[in-house]
Length: 366
Image (cartoon, rainbow, N blue to C red; front, side):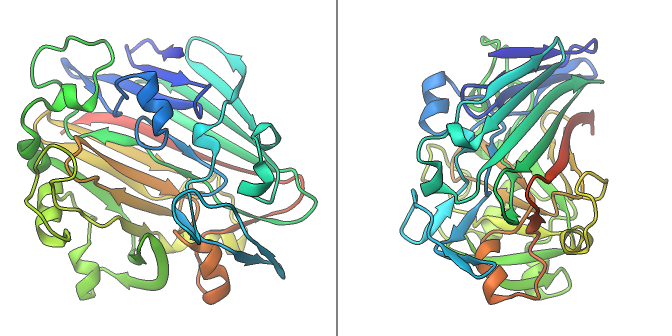
């Protein structure tokens, strides 16, 4: 594990051997220390489910996509790991990355897809992905650079899956250097679902059924759009009460709380950028965040134009939530065929071309 820090006292812990995952990031906010990421309790927990804690990098695709899929006249059938006909989150989060540069505040890791066993079964196109973690000015930045190593244009998709504790500061004295979300939340699981308020600055809500985008898009003036509107902070508990499928709100242990569907959002200008050839490195992606009223801390996740989509995931009964910046929509590969005029964020990457984008995580007092 590599520990990065800056002169403000902010620190990040990154594990290259498991997805180059930043499993912990904390930074001073006033007189307190805010722990912005949900840290796994052990390396076994991380390895057992590497896309369910810390700050996973999702490549070669984020979210769920139907398989087989068609691309430029060819049909590809990708091996599934979740359920027949559906692929989920790619393999980068569980792969071992190589460290190519390290300093006190920066870590550069690279994943060569050809080092992943049976890569061809999991994704038909070879690539190289570089992740640069940096801690500076009390914030964490992540730069991603994916290079197409195939001899044809490929559909580029990439996402991030950071998990945020329901509370950023401890309910009492901490006994661990790297507290888990459970350590921070303590026994008040119901109360912290009321005081944890996610928000997403987007234009539209995108419908999903069983995790797959359907092509239905609603702005926030429609009834469906208004119900899911997160342009202003809303508590997890309120969302569960109004949108969840069934169950009693805010109950721990896991599995007993209401199950809130994953909510998917898009920025129209950034989504059209992929088609119009705008640089994914430029500013203009979706900004999202979490307001923790109990701690008086706001976490802000800003992204470049390469991340035109974002999903809110609130696993039932767990002491954390996730906001997922994505370069393309859920089921973008299927929608590419069924809704060819719909901008889903897929970036056509030429042989040898590199897609580059960034995300910036910071904290401030409310």
